Structures are given as C-alpha cells and as structure tokens.
Image 1 (spheres, rainbow, N blue to C red):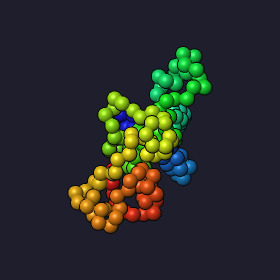
Image 2: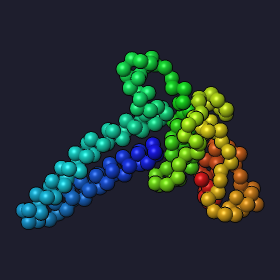
Image 3: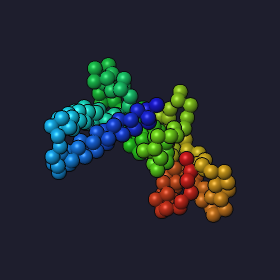
Length: 181
C-alpha cells in the first residue's frame, strides 16, 4: 500500500500544479465573465493550497522512503524513544529502499500497478545477503519474471537473463527492450 499512497500524493501534487498553472494562464490570456473569473480564481487558490500542503508531505514521505523508515519509526526517533543517530536496520541504500517499495524495475515506479516482491511480513536488513546497499540487497535478488508468456525463453535465447538486479539495471540502461517485472 505504501507504493500506492506515495503515487497518490505525487499524482495529486502534479495535478494541482497543472490545474493552477493552466487556470492562471487562461486568466492572464482572456477576459471572462465576473462569475467565471471568481470561480477560476477560487480554483487556483484551492489548487495552490493543496500543493502547499501536500508538496511538503510528499517530500517528507520520499525522505522517509529514502531511509526505509516508517512514520512510526520517525516519531520514535523524534520523540527520543530511540537514539536519533541510530541507523535503521532496514536502510539498504536509497535505490534499494525505493525498490523495496516500488518494485525493482524503475520503469514501472510511476505506474499504478504491481507491487514489490515479498510477503509483507518479513523484510531484508542492511548487511544481510548481498553487498549492503546494492540493488541485489533488497529481498535477495531472483532473476526477473518476464511479463509475457515466452519472453523468458526469448530472453534466454539471446543470452539475456541477468543474474542480479545491478546487471538488470545496467542492461535496461543499454536499451535491451525485454519487459520484465
């Protein structure tokens, strides 16, 4: 659910920014009847207010996500229950932290489907498994499951079955074109 909550915040902030800039541009370009101008002005004020409230909230959640920390963990540190300088045992590095919430394929991070792997009850800790902070560290990397039937066989035929998340990210960066999730 964390992925969809962060996406909801991002979509809302982006929509509010788009709405306020579009309405302001329309107000600057033309003359409208008084009632419509007032309603458009109210729309700009409302969208700017939502952006001003939700923008920092989104930023804070992205900051928490970059440290793989929950709101409760943050409040415990802020309230003095846990030493503020203590590292989170779940902080795997920024990229791996984002992967643990959005899934390990960055091409799908902004799309509202899919979920990270795992059972939701156990989570990898820093230093367990692969090199800490690497993309492989999150959830103990398994070779990707390809989205379409036969794609995995085709990937094997051309010799493209990455053995690690790092190799996958490098290969995708080179534009290999197989869509795996």
